[in-house]
Image (cartoon, rainbow, N blue to C red; front, side, top):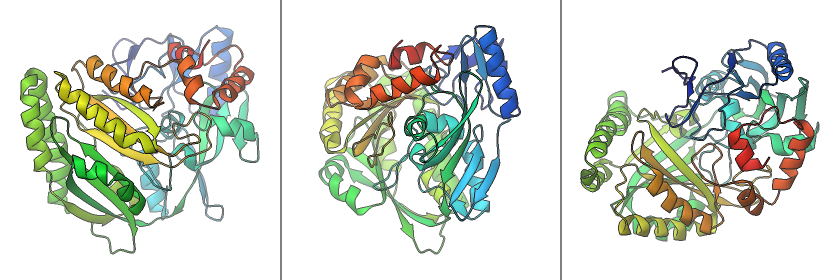
Length: 439
């Protein structure tokens, strides 16, 4: 399976394997002109249009039975403006290629998620984020956008140009147009020191506010069926570089985190009763480590074990209570959970449909190994998250609809009004957008 997550006989599948679609046709434009022509032709033929990145969303946000646009030829850096501290990049560029190219230029994004397989436009459009006390999601680092709208015209926006479009389109869900290029704020490359250490669940939840306040980037993973977590603190460092050694890195990141974890999940899928014992063993296998490296080598890590994920954004002050409720629900149930639960944070931002829009936020992400039934666990988790006015990640499994979103996003109407203006005929509509944005 390629990174574009394609399948046999014209069927497209996502990375998690839980979404499939059969587009009427697929195109791979090599230029913005070719893309606009494809959108115009689709309109003539009455076809809906969707762009798909690496297929890393667990929702059907990119699925279509119309025209599927694959942006993998729209890649590379268009422009580096050192004076303005920006870089303009083609929409289909994978984050991993952007990170390497920026590092070669002595530059970096300020923050990033822990996976870098996604395209820049796919990651931004769904609100992909890392963890940070002061620095926010990938979309919050955007300074300008270029996109093809429903009538085939090319629209550019920034804080100065079409600001009302810019306010919404940074996380546009593919509903406003097809993003063709993104201008990101960048800064001179810096070093981060990562400190990873196991910590008891009770201690990390009791000290959460201090751990958040004392660290630029704090996150932790709780292992269900145990009272154990693994914490990670990333802070800027004067150096020197002290990367993880090659052998140690391979053992901890590839062998333990991917190889052994894959086998443990295979065993758990075949014999769920073994999962609590495996969880206890794997949560104790992790040891503390400290290393210093350039940002993308600290923020990101390989994820070769495939899974399905649900993640909700909660008001930061509600996260500990919510997590304790989730732990109690798992302990009361007959669920067997082999994947750790991930907790991260983000500061409030000003993007209409950002999960952190207008409020300081913490995220709780629940995962299940690919191929195991996830509905019972995700339903129980979602009931807890929505009771705290949670906002689901746009690219991860959830059951919410437009009515719910209009209640948890104060600027929801602003986004849908802009969509009515930019795509009145719903050229970019699909079943997912009909559900989350309304008809």
